[in-house]
Image (cartoon, rainbow, N blue to C red):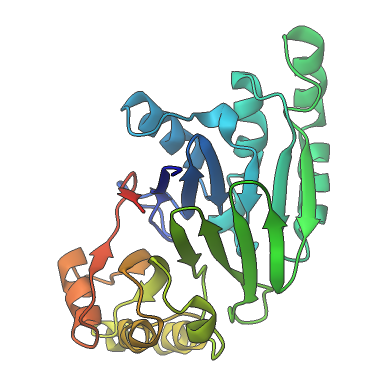
Length: 278
């Protein structure tokens, strides 16, 4: 049986945080990681995890990426993901799947860094493919298959921005990652019975303290603790992991308690570099 692990690389939000970088989750099957989102600091977290002995793979193994949506806190680490593992010795293209707009973003990033690419290839030992990106724009349905995993996408509801949730079927079980989204009617049946559900959440208890304009925004495109509890009752995951957590003054334990007031399953408020075995 393959060993499958879930590594929370970034548990934060668009807001800069001293202890959390922005969104990034790795689902690793043996020594092959599949990366979901790449906010700022994700490659650094991989290096930290490897140096701490948490994982057997390292940055050069980052060759598969799935982006939930193109907000900066989920994609601003893409140039780092392209170029730093290349410097470390990655010798194959990064395969990147995501919503419409990803291919254009990839083209413009390579254009923006063309002087870096030119000089590095001329002056340093480096592979021809290690900095390149195979950007694949996808929609709902099966989107990736290899000998280790199947990946399926579902349309998420994050306002006017194209967004996806992902389901990863591995030899040891199934992981579902929400991305940023308001609850979607099809999600519960699509995710039902998964082993691990990784879902965004905001504090319902502190929602009323937010300015009215922000209340309108978050209610329209994100998931409250109460909504997540109701969703989890339908999905029935073995483990519910909270990420992209909007605490607004709550402690992690208080946010977990909010969810558990309406859901009696196992709930964990994640931190960067938390590691879970399937």
